[in-house]
Image (tube, rainbow over all chains, first blue to last red; front, side, top):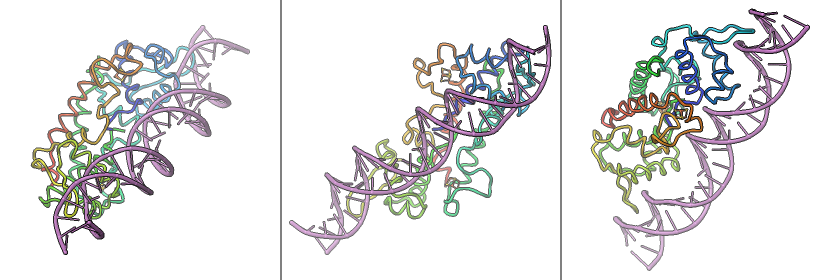
Length: 130
Length: 130
DNA sequence: GCAAGTAGGACTTTTTTAGTCCTATATAAC
DNA sequence: GTTATATAGGACTAAAAAAGTCCTACTTGC
Ligand code: SF4
Ligand code: SF4
């Protein structure tokens, strides 16, 4: 369906929120203001932290903050951090692919298409969402 | 997951097949040569015909053929013909959207991203898969 | 000590995609 | 005009992925 998952969408919303306020925010704050499931967003924030886009501080008065400037966070980084697979087809590496690989005649072109998609996604940053 | 469905993938393979041979082919021929489920491909071909990309002739010695030159069939046309929804988010029209629309702050940017994706998809044609 | 936070495992539900099965209809060849 | 070979298409099942929920543990400022 060529659709971005809700995880990515929520992630972008959260990053936009942090970029806009320029301050630390708790998951609760972000989820409330944007009508996003708290539990779901909590996981997303953890993933973004793991990826190095966010830092966190635990305990009272804790929360999440941006590790990078908004213009340093391209959308494809968010996709990479939040989705298992972000390839346009089952083909990930040049070598292992789907069961039809032996007879497949579109693998090469698909990889090129993939690259172009990546480029679009990497050319847009959080700063452009403000 | 930002992934093209198998329907689109198989559709592209089939179109490539037709473009390569430049002749009419039956679903059986294409499905056999490319190890694609016959039933599944049959539906795909019907959809591509409905969209005007292919013509068909029924009965003995029938089959499917291209209605357009390979360079006149961009990938995004195939996507449009084979997938219900091809938008990057739930947002389709400018007006109706998801339940979070009232508080959503990324709708505009998402639409722009969508446009760029479309452009990539429309700039690659079947001719480039040969 | 306790309230406010993040960290994260395990799970259920829902939605989407992929794949199958069966029947009807058209037509060229004989 | 019968028959084999095609497309046309409805209905269904199975599998995979995404979305959402629930519960517990750990951290830390006050
Ligand atoms: S069909 Fe071809 S392009 Fe698609 S996943 Fe398989 S090998 Fe890759
Ligand atoms: S969250 Fe915003 S961009 Fe996403 S579907 Fe809802 S209204 Fe559209």
